[in-house]
Image (cartoon, helix red, strand yellow):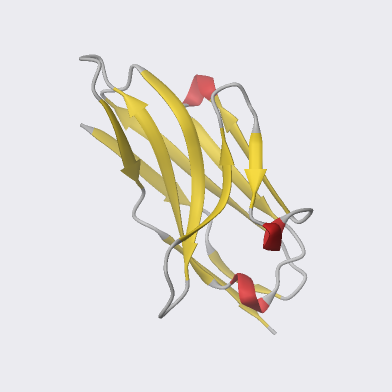
Length: 120
């Protein structure tokens, strides 16, 4: 089995920063794309940022210039550095990874979610 474990959420004031981490473990042969999504109450889960295995990135327009996604392939871990946080960034943040196991099976996996709250 594969597990994604997130950490780093919390409460921060407007303009503050947080760094989220997501570590993948288990039956992992390779990890393709990794990403972060967020979901506020009453809304759908939306992509925040994505990074491919070769380091190419893309971001939602709302976070460009403020958030940075990165990954450490040796540790099977991805990060989301969030700066200049705004109240509208408040949501549950989920990490996602497209993982191939040792049997060649490719699937999407999700973390448990971590709450980020930005106070005004």
